[in-house]
Image 1 (cartoon, rainbow, N blue to C red):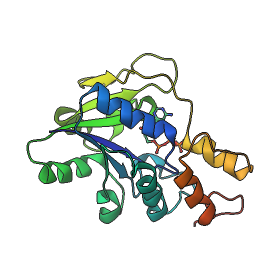
Image 2 (spheres, rainbow, N blue to C red; image 1 turned 135 degrees about the vertical axis):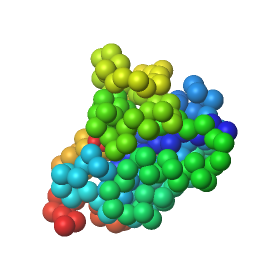
Image 3 (cartoon, helix red, strand yellow; image 1 turned 90 degrees about the vertical axis):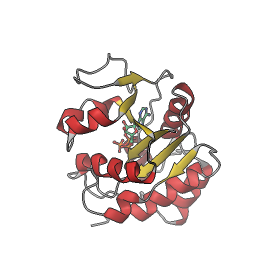
Length: 196
Ligand code: ATP
């Protein structure tokens, strides 16, 4: 079995994430893509006011409920603490013995790979499927099995969406209607909001 692991903060999940998952699955003949919302991303520890994990998890659930080849894992939420991909992979290896794992990520995340927790072991265990986020070549990460996803650049980011929502602008083109409804119902990403 070939499994794509797609980790992220998903604050909120947007069409860029879904496009990435769909294209990765088809291009690399993955049996499924499992979304893994981070409890606390090691790369975003200094980012203020990240939305509580339970909301981010629920938005991912809503966004992928009609995506036939997508799954959702609460492993990082259950573990709590800093969400290291290596620890998640060890859990998945136990859950899916014999499976081949692929890590799906954007180029911005991939170029920091050498600083990740237990990066050398991670590089040996998985293949990386990388999406371009702007028009540049493959970053200089060594000793790694990595391939580009062939898809048009998708200039959507969660930070851009949060900023637009705070300004009261429409983000209907970037988010699934169910996620949009969830954001409205739970009054997320408002100007006056602070989670701390
Ligand atoms: P933020 O803008 O807050 O940093 P984000 O949109 O990058 O958030 P994350 O949850 O951090 O969202 O992303 C999860 C993964 O998806 C990361 O590896 C990121 O590089 C990738 N990704 C997100 N959006 C895109 C996009 N539009 N095109 C390609 N990769 C993307």
